[in-house]
Length: 443
Length: 168
Image (cartoon, rainbow over all chains, first blue to last red):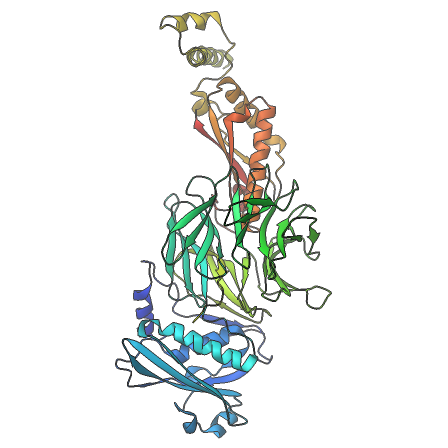
């Protein structure tokens, strides 16, 4: 069973967003669509009441409650009551008529208000209640610039998520991805950074030649990526805020698949100057290289386990691509995946329990998640295919981003880690690919 | 039919030898290259620099592959052989072998696959007489498709190595 819910954005909000986009590219869709594959499961019903504007000067362009509602829905853990069904508008706990919401079988309710904090800032106060118990669970005030109200809204969603589920929310995070626009031979590639819901896209790098494999530094300040601007592949590290960048490797052959170690001091990368693609680790201080693999197969797409002790990479040493694990100091590689004929490009959840990958069977490529926490190694697919790739876990492991295609165009999807709830991200025009979910941000 | 073609080939050979001799002996006095043309008939080989645009075999510059494979299929052996011959004949010629993959599978793995295909063409050209220093392999993986539909008729066009002359 599949239920498709369409949520309509107010036209004014849309206009503001289009105007605010960093590039000249417009937004593709005004209607973010959430697919809920299985309606009967236990997503928590929650009401987010419109946040009242109190002494806020001009009404804010961002509807905080709308952003929170979309975030919680996208996670798959919540089912927010649609905006049009929220018929009462309490803005304080004392104004909530609990029987109304109890009748609607709602578990939680959030009420809040936005007020002027001076100097162009707005103060967002909100409270979360348990409907059945009529009990206040917590309240919080977050202040942010008027122009940055979406960030505040994402932080509200994070706080609600964490209070109820006891898991840190990851809505106030950023994602990196690559777009290509135009028609060959006049293609324009851009490395972009946007909010976790796809809004506020900013161009980090533009190039006439392919860009690929963006990877976040653990502090969220830098991106490593591959650029063909020199004719062949080269790896760069660029600071997002300043644009200053450093050439990391342009050896003969492939310079690809960069991945920062969890402490940010080292970079795993794929180099083929030795004759075929092998995994290396570069100490970013000294630039010294340590070779981790030595095999005539293609070894690539290394990613670090959260403890920094080992890496999981793709190798076709058994004939077809499969995932292998190797100690960060080098040594024998152990095969990780056994189900499926093609398993590649791992993304590992923060606790190391889950490994997402692109899994191919015949001509269908889906995102699959291997759960190693229960010993056996259960694999479940979380995307429908047929050309899905580049999975990337949210920093709290609750969701994944991945790349899919619609006709000749690439698009990005966010999917809950259990595969139940899926949403296409609203992004700038063009062919979009290679999402990389950034780390948690610090307030 | 046969006779005019043979004449044409003979004419091409003469030009070829002249061009070759010029390169081999750049310090010769101006009058000497003409004489060496007569002194060394046919030894310069079957191609001229123009053959890249005129010879049906040399004009074929794309080698296609099966899915996830890098073996060169029999139908491309003739193409490999004529490019190897050209490169043997003109040691100053340089070629970039651009390896590509179809969209299936992951981008970085496909970079590896494109390189493996480029290396396969490089090895075949060297085995057939080209100098390895004349050849440079670049892999674009799945980043440079010639066709963007999702199906074998399109994928088969993207699994390829393009033989690109950077110095003719």
